[in-house]
Length: 378
Image 1 (cartoon, rainbow, N blue to C red):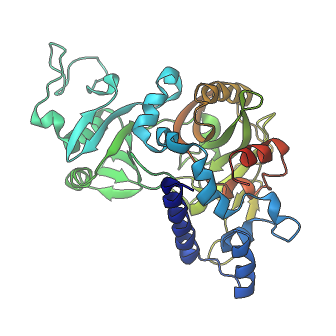
Image 2 (cartoon, rainbow, N blue to C red):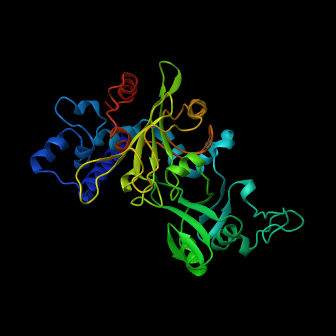
């Protein structure tokens, strides 16, 4: 094991320990020891069917936190750095969100050429674009707080997200309202929003991608994303879809759809795009996963509904994964915008697996098992 691998192993074990310490799920000490010796945390005991004859079929928490981090090697930065990933996706511009710029040291640094100037509905110049067509780089145009506020005057919603990190953390959904602004549902005055933006460091200012009617009907108060895990089969020389789920927000998870925060995870049939029932983590009053055939807050049917244009989505995503074969293991987060159309809003180098394996173990699939074995996870 080299120094880099040793460092990531130590960091992974630290992450495991912290996660276990912060978990609201408790187990008797004897059961905990049984779980720990096999690489699982207490929460996994609630989600998975862990017995002596079944636990080997699951990717353990240790394998996920420590070993899957090594799969993409140094190229994991192509996914973990969101600005770099935006550049990697440039050949697939129809499937990436606009990144207007980055906030750093209180300044706004333009990223996309199309996002470097504010545009108004009639196509005329703005305060940031003089009539001559050349963008001014005055102190006002470089001021990050000013740029975000002005952008919100032209677009009702924006997404601010940290360039590093994943899991839905450090994501700010910003919305203009009649009485000011909302950030992740909380009210902000103009001055408070400017102060918030001024304090951010290395955050991307991104367009808010409107989900299509299918995803919106599942739960309209959050973006509802599809997580697709692809693996590159070196023997066959092609990528394949290992698993897919549709994440659906709830009152518990809002303003996001994260499974770890109380959102639903519905398994996607890889052939048809049909959804299964939505699983939900236990709340404070329960110790079991709850399964919902319909949305618990809205009553909208979940089980048996079909993602529109799923086969086109799957095939197009495999084309993208093939073009990125130097990164063999990817968890793609998609917003389905229309029938067969989608936007990749993020990609993960070592995607979380609880929201996937709550539906069943991954390692019963021979192709998936071989992939993990080839990369030293098993």
